[in-house]
Length: 117
Image (tube, rainbow, N blue to C red; front, side, top):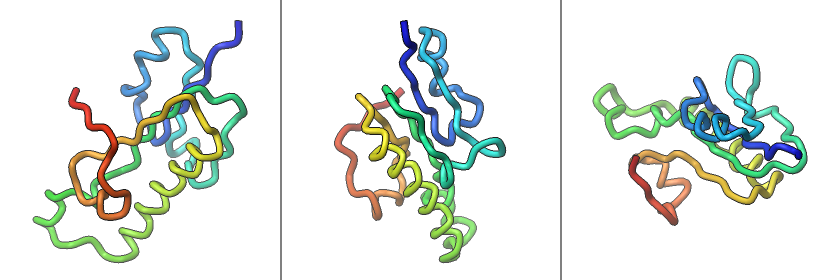
């Protein structure tokens, strides 16, 4: 039996994809320093994608320390863009993009579904 592939983009420790790994899925954590989502080429037959691009630049709390500079915003958006590109290229059965309630909505719009852990 072929294991279904789950990509955990910007996955860090792999905590979000751990339930899939525990259930026997072929989980691939695509995160720095080993992998950069901006240059990553996904394999064929990706079943699901969990994407958690860094969101600190878009955080409301970030405003306490001053607004981010344009180059910081562009760098952060390039990571979000790469995650979305991988999702489109892979055409998985399901995908989720972590977008804590913050300013990223300015670029992505309102989410279709909101869930709380």
